[in-house]
Image (cartoon, rainbow, N blue to C red):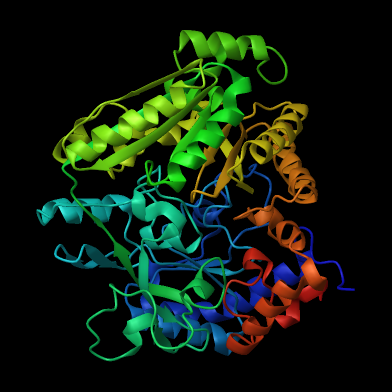
Length: 534
């Protein structure tokens, strides 16, 4: 049987060796980019750590950061790394907070920050797409669409400062109809581990007219191989946009009784399967929504998680219920009215459930007060970032724990009960959002929130997340993305047929990147020289 994989980190001696080798490459990186685009000062490098790790934890720290501005510079950085045997850790904006932020999986790696490659290269209103570089944030693409006067909407993530490309490559979730099953990406340009350049799909044909319009090409379609992997550095990506509908209607479903969650899930599945609800809704529990509108100390200052009777009080006084679902309807006004009535009747048949919605013109979405309603309308902000401050304000942090479940009541409740009991046993509040990425499955987004200045609480958050990786897998629920601290553990659960899937990924890694230069350990895909602790 397959030997056990690394459960946490490489031996310290390996990290020290990587840092030394990276130091030898700094002259070449500096000659290429100039000193102003190479960061190697120890104090300055602290800004490139996991933003939520405790101050003294140094498992995942870089030896340098390089900041290219062109594709040609990315290619040369990869070639320099190859000559010196330096592992690179490519990031876009580095805002993957809750999963490690910009920090590298291997101590001493050189971070390749693509934030200066931030051009919106094309916006085509006629066919509703854009072509962007990896440093383009949700804010940037949204503003470019508006500046061009384009009547187009962008499917965005909850927090506007992240990279459009980076979020997509990590299977991040967005909320307009093109957010379902991460459909918004079409066509890539990729720097491979030997420094060569490739375009996927129709981009492989010089002068082809459909690169951002047709997802496939001739033969295998490799785009998915560059998502959550370490096979290349994506330098351009197509993004599908949505033409303005006649009407946008953000909708809410308030569930007063915790026991009704399962029935809500089943109704939602049926409405998504028949197309009444499109896009990606959210079902948010009391505590998670409360992080945006109130402070924890107003409700509970005792030891341990907030008890049920206090949650009921919060649900009533904040008028948010025990679960609150957001969704939206886009389309012609008559269609919106029809679908809303169908939605309302279906959910209100449960009893103890309230449904409401407000129609607005697409032009008026930026003026909506509720940030959830703006996000579903494609208008980015930072308002929802307040979630991390539940325990300690600006010094709050979280671990993202996100298994996938069938969108069925039995599965949803079994997973809910497992995660709630585990997190509360660790002394923390259970904060959950169910995000149906399709009509058939949802990501159970669990924010394991803690005070980053409290080492015991921070350790409890990381430890319970790792325990739940294993416990959830025993019940048939697997992570769809994983924090640096437990990438190996999460991948270990995908063990069918003696890890046939991982062995396939490793064969691709060995063929494309025999030196193991690009992002070793990303999603537990290690180069041959680093496997099994060697």
